[in-house]
Length: 572
Image (tube, rainbow, N blue to C red; front, side, top):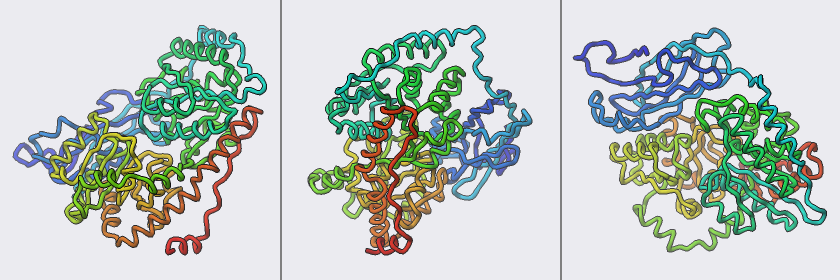
């Protein structure tokens, strides 16, 4: 590693102004073209890391994810007590377009900039390994295992008059946005008295009980991705079980559940597949399963995507990522349906005493900034905490509330930062909860600082609760929010820009925040009507049950009002 900047190479007598290291890839290690992952840390004597720019052969390739835990640096004597030490890690994943086809050797540079405007640079020469070869079944073993599944009697549709039997695969049943979305979609479909539904998942959790309450049968089984034997054995077991139960269609939730789409395709069943993940496919595999992947299993995922009857996306930006894998005619954009009646009923009937208990934990004049979502690196709560620190002294009545703590090293890093930065009375980590509506009701401002999102439900809910929203300008979020009109946008993985946006909203007059919040509520109620979503989902299922090769269709959202009409609406 080469490093340049203040305090480097000046001898022991010179005070060190920064520390930094590229930990992965290590010197001499080959880097894979399809899934290059860069992990390191950067720390300054003063301030936090504001952004980390990654360059390949001198060309800007992207910004790294910030705020990863660095517990070893917290008590580093070299720089004294910098509160940001515990959250000074960064990570970057390369996409196929970020690395040149030639040559095999490239120079990786990492430019680290602080919130005080200081910079330093690190570099490393990388040797890129050839692209991963396609799977070659030289012994015919994989073909033989697939033939075992082909020998299973194909699924027969339900006897006439029994209605539709739907099998739904999801990745897990614990707390999370995709899990909550899945429950809502199954609930929509179960309103049809002629439909029966069974759910398969590898991990149990909170939503299992809710599903069983509405009459859904739940089965737990693993989704192995290790190799041909493990994968094909699981496929054979699922295929035999599915054939016995005579399902009519399969609904798949998230990329993690791709085995369900693969089995359904082999049995000739139509597949509706909801994809939430805004990742390039090789990068998603690295994040979900680690760097190593069996080429056969990865090719089964690619094949399942190409053959699915309908791929459903919450945002056009996410859909564009998957265009290399499926025909455009099989892909639809369907903004989530939001349970607006549930929200309205809650707001009319919620317990004032319980709301008062929540508010009583904070000063009477406190402005509560809510970030609601599982505390993890993708949601960037560590970046938000550091941005809040930039503006906290200017807005002494502001309190940051991070709801969704499940423990772990990322959460611990934030807790250490909050303590070391002297923010313990102003920044609060709250465990994950099923009472999201209560938090939305007491919040004054909502923030989602994620660096990857499609169309997060928490933002939609906050807007429906008429709370002004600050969100990162990533993937589907700009399709929902127009900056300054119905919400506020900031750049992802940029502490200063997020701090600027926080200050902008905290400094705004209450009337402005109210106007933006009302415009946001109007946008959500127009775009995310649950009845329209439910109609489209049921119609799509019926369409595919009748003809698995039919071109999927979805009811479009109503047209947006003209700029003049929207301006009038916002000033109503």
